[in-house]
Length: 252
Image (tube, rainbow, N blue to C red; front, side):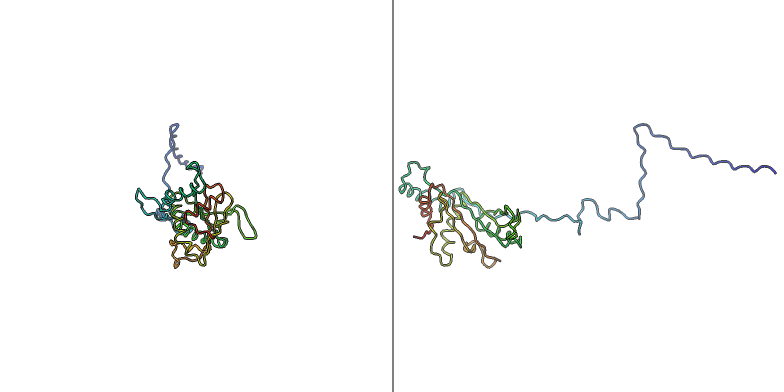
């Protein structure tokens, strides 16, 4: 019997020719797995919802509305200072130079919100009311150090403040003396000794609702506030005479 013939080997498939140096072979496109379209799941950069959605950071900040003023506008108290108070101060203290006559440099309004330790929203509400009173945006004040007794941590928001200069300062002084202080219950006048020895005067108000800008029906809580009047006077006597010229009602 003839020897069994071995089957012929199948010819090997030819290898693809090597690409020229510096050229990379083109990749074949991958087939879509699962038959689903990735675009249907959400395109990159499109709006997302749920846990993966970007958080809203609060949007634009609210701005205090400003009333347009004429070019020749000047606050009433500023005119009163230039035409009346300056002459009276020069006669009373005998200043040789007009630049020596004291003037109000700035007015600082401060609100301390102790309840903010438990509720951060109360600071925002107080800052909104203070901005309405002052006519400009309030700045949030933060704790400089931690106090365990009062549950205060370093950097925690505990109040707000506003610094007024120029025309807004004179407008606030006018509203304070003419409207706000007469609305204080059982008001008997300001303490004439509330000066710091350098011509600066400080006073405290128990209720911020005495200002006409605050609507009592829309206020959730009543806040107290400090009013600090900084002058260029060299001593308390000159500063007291200056504020009397602005009709500050000091006790006699």
